[in-house]
Image (cartoon, rainbow, N blue to C red; front, side):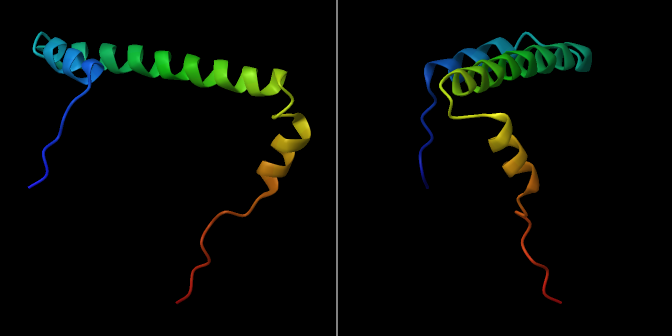
Length: 73
């Protein structure tokens, strides 16, 4: 059996979760975490845009990509 080692952030969140007693509290934490990661994703996208790695042409190209696996009956 593999042993899982948690990092500091994971351990901190696990300890903090012991104080969450309601579904509403869990929902609030989920919203806060979603907001945090959405902000980080936006910051990274802005950085890529400023560096010229990401552009409207690249976004249009991604939009047109067909990434679904072909279904074979």
